[in-house]
Length: 149
Image (cartoon, rainbow, N blue to C red; front, side, top):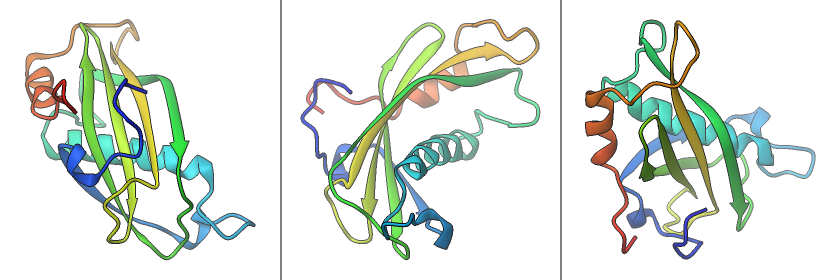
């Protein structure tokens, strides 16, 4: 995670994506299973990229591959709860991006979990890293976290 304090608020994230939980998201202990949060992260970021028009999952010549991920859990969530995933970009490199995602349950404004993942952008054809396309970089800069958070 970044050096920012943990347990962020919804306002700390530049964009918000609504995610509907499912019955199957709960585990035997009656709360949303830890692995499901990683699906929330992936869903939120890719939904935002698609909506911004910088990812066409079938035809984009450049695609992002996850090379690192992590999550810290602060309190459990359980189905049925509407989830809001807050997203921001912590760092933009030549061919990589570090996304940070906060998961918020219902009307809560403090995170139930916070995580990150790093995409390395590669050529769909060769699988080799490539510089971020200009339109992708411009979109990412709109959700780049400021140094103060």
